[in-house]
Length: 545
Image (cartoon, rainbow, N blue to C red; front, side, top):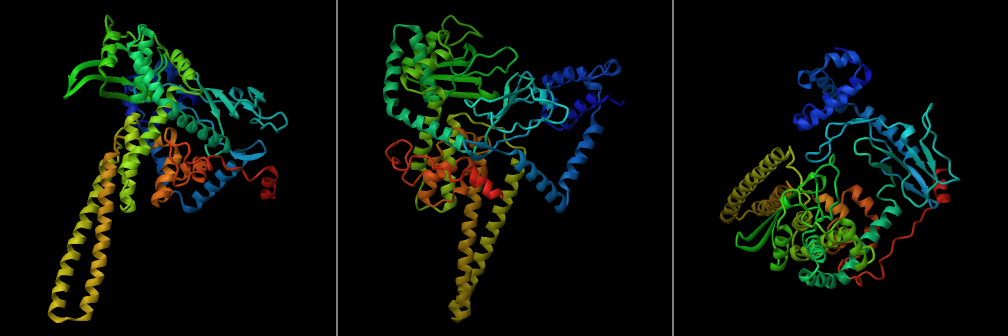
């Protein structure tokens, strides 16, 4: 049947996703159908009663055809689109901040579609509505030119608030969260914020021993609330758990340390030869499952056992503690201290210590890269940065194995040929045979090095298949550790950071020397300052002229 425009558009959102796992999930389908019905006219509602009886295949094929056409665009068509996007970028992608031209992050508002969420989010499949100019708040200087809204529309509001860093904001309809247009991660303001974040984490190193001694002493405190705070802080410090916040009923049931419940914890006097084991099993941020069995000090074990006594499913483990109380206490211990600072500190410290342990200065570059990724992987495991095995993993490993087999065969052929030429040279002492043999030796060495690279690549790829390395690299690891490591061991920075990451961490690339140490604040006392910006508005105008 022919649908009305709005109903057809929303049906198209679903049709695009037919080959995705989401459309096999009951919650996704229920939420989609519920919102789709709202967009239908009376006749459509009378006719369409069940999603299972709707056939979206024709629409799905149409979108597949469009996708194929996009892939098959000519070089000229792609270049034209690139130039058009660059023109839009130049018009909307920059702002003036404190007299300096700065790049804006993603200045495009997300189009309407179906909400996906992470894990088994209860709102998956709901309709993300189109954002109109009347929904958007603009934030700019009083003396600046306010960007014009689309013809026939007006902005919800124009503000002049210089105490915040966002340039525009609106409220999305799924979770009623604010969405912002911010500066690009490579901007000076963002770089300064990053630098301060890691400097705060370094400051924690000065007081971490006292904090640990204090919370260990509090394991035996007479007040139950103090004991609970001490054990929670132990978990946050040692396991890099997030603090956790209370959730509404219509939000995903994700938890952190302070919101752990009875059903998330199991205690074992002994497990796999380890004494006093606490077994965790819960959904963390983005509905990523956290499963971990940890041997803890006897006093921690006894306290957790006490906290669980006379409790049942849905009861809080820490019933006398919440995130606000914990954060207030942390601020008293050190200015700016939060659970996230512990996470940043322990992640960066782990990377630095692992790099020191795993890196062999005499290794070839590809072996050093494997050492770096293994150090990064240790951090990702600590922070529970998991991912699903990519769909292309099996195929890519199969292709890599074919390359390895082909390289082994090549080495075998070269070795056989070299032995034959060597034997001929012994018999006839011909100079040409000696020259040919030397060439084969070089080819053999080159082939063996290539095989070694492929084998390390296969090992690295296999070890990474369920680990997300980029999350910790972007958010928790002081980039100066990686920059210093690259400079110390002559590894190109491009091998560690991609282009976007290099732009984001340009301040660290400029600042860090090969002697930088995250745990030693004296290692960079003379260089620990942000590079002054060289261009101002006048320079920018001159450049444009």
